[in-house]
Length: 308
Length: 269
Image 1: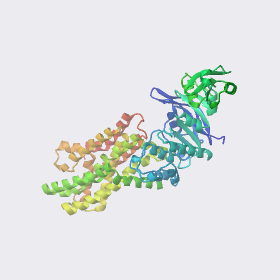
Image 2 (image 1 turned 120 degrees about the vertical axis):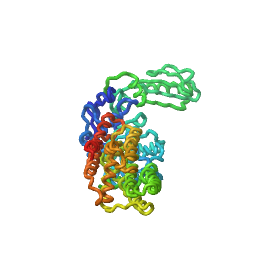
Image 3 (image 1 turned 45 degrees about the vertical axis):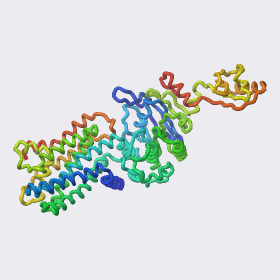
Image 4 (image 1 turned 135 degrees about the vertical axis):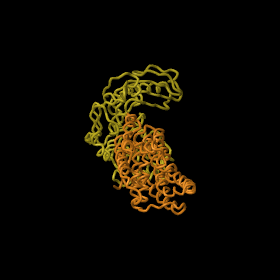
């Protein structure tokens, strides 16, 4: 499972005078979900398109399952499945025709079970142009994985999907990973990345600003944990004392909010105070910083790159 | 091979499913044929000799110049080619399949024009059907090459439509479809040699009556060269992506497709 399936080394890509990718290096191993995170214009899609072999990088070394995307374009198609951020199919092509069409080029039998699973079973005879945006995205996903590729590139895969389809996609990505496929995922959705990714790289202005597992990324941040407490009588709201290691942030509805760098000690002190004051605990929430907060922390500060 | 056949089968079906293709493959040439056939045959009985080759060529031009270029550009602009590329569809298939599937539709259209022309308008049937089919195929290949080249080189749908019309309209007027080339003033007759239609009409007229007209070998050679050069240039300038650079360089390269006709016009053949 340690086999490197996707490798980018010192990747650079410019469009005219615009440097989209300045110097990006990362690798993803077999059976791993690797997320590329970043705001618009951070270089996610350009990086993916270079890896997919549909753009020629200016410099750097790329390897997908041992293949150079620029030199082994034909062989690459057999091992790679791609869902592009923006692509289309002929408007008059039905879902069933699309499956037969692309599977014929991959030399595989169409997997209509995937069509059913992603909720397109009733649309098999519908033309692409009549599908909703979400249905078109789901069909693109099915086409990306129908030939059981070793490496799957997904660019904003859940954009435009409803909750049910999103859950199906997450389950599908989990199955791909369990089956040994490597999934490289570009997304804006930090919660999705935190849930799915084994490792992630945060891209800013064409560079890797931070890289690691979601836990490593969040742990490398400001380490401040949010503690929210609600009590029956609300005594904490009225008379909040100073607790060790915790600073009060003011009330939010019925909750007293504290930020702590030592949540264990702070929570114990808060519970002891509530008990001593004769109040009763209604709700206690301890939230470590999310990947989104860590991302905003990184994105908000100028960086020259680094590892978590 | 299976993939090619699946792709071809799909593309052929869209000829009936897609309203714009249905219009330009069958309805537009069909209505034009019915009107011109009825009108011209009654005004000028000599037109009956030209009716089948002229209307067949009209259908070819309608399908290749007015349909293939905009179809290719629209697919590129919509990102269809990007989907094709990431799923392993070769660029040769992207260019060859519309050519072959349109040829199949044109075989149906040409057969209908022949049958209706002869039966309804008393048009002269080709004396050698096989010879007519071969020259018709060569004429189609030349126009399909031009259509594919325009589609591969045009930077936008508007440019593709304008470029198609730039060949289509003069071909109708000066290409010998409505007015025999012999009736044109000498300067216009020379100018008309820049148009594929003039060479197509010479070849098709010869195929209709091979004994009575000398073999127009220069026109046949010009059409063959046009097909080869245009398909070669189309493959050279083809881009998968609308965002690709250098559209003007592609357009200028595409102008090389006129070389065989320029040489024919210079030779005055």
